[in-house]
Length: 167
Image 1 (cartoon, one colour):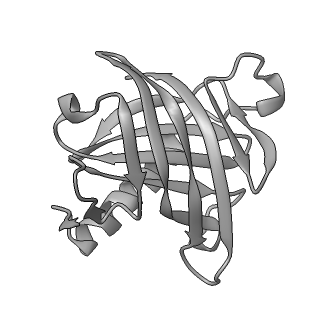
Image 2 (spheres, rainbow, N blue to C red):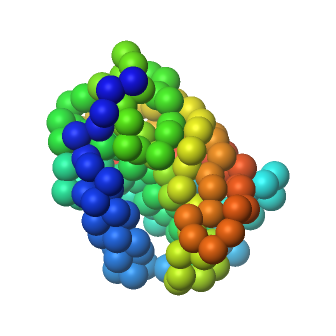
């Protein structure tokens, strides 16, 4: 494994920017969403779905973001080269270390029903499978575990699908 170009302070800044971006997203009501473009199971519960998920560029990376009621999931693709994002299987970790044989680090953040970090979980392992990429579109699946970022040791098992456009 090689070190990721983001230092720990840069990773924290990226996390804060991502969390701040949650505030600017339109809230999705999962019960009104009949054709979701981002779904997830959290600890086996299939309640996360949104029709308004999308991909976007942020700092030196790209993210796929969706919210369902008060819950949020952001998948981080830690590369400044959008062309490096291609169909394939990617190891998910905490986004700090680029796994061997992989062009960039991948992580996800799950934020459950709250605004403070005690309800925020950062991935520590998993797999992202990108099945389709075009100039304005990403589709695929992901699964992994995430640990509570502050105030506890809780772990969440998160898996899902996405089919989003780039903004």
